[in-house]
Length: 81
Image (cartoon, rainbow, N blue to C red; front, side, top):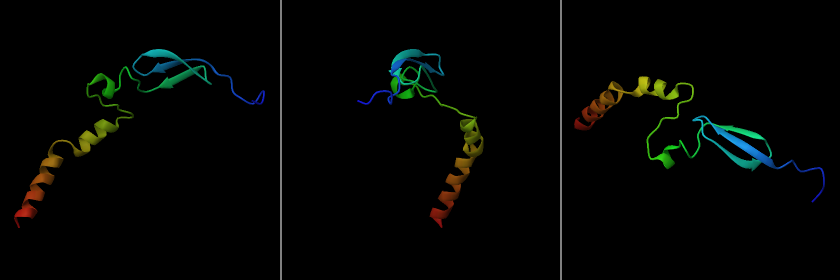
């Protein structure tokens, strides 16, 4: 290997948005992540919306409730004709 061209490989602290922290090795001393294995729905078995900037709420307001009921009625009306 050539000398002085590779980054330093140091112990790194990983911090999740849920508060979970663990240590690994990386080229950066600190890594911030939004979701980890302690809070990800695949590993926990619980459904959880990861909402960034209110996107889930905006989607629920736009398409939730009566929107799909109206679309179903419209689809039934066109199939009967």
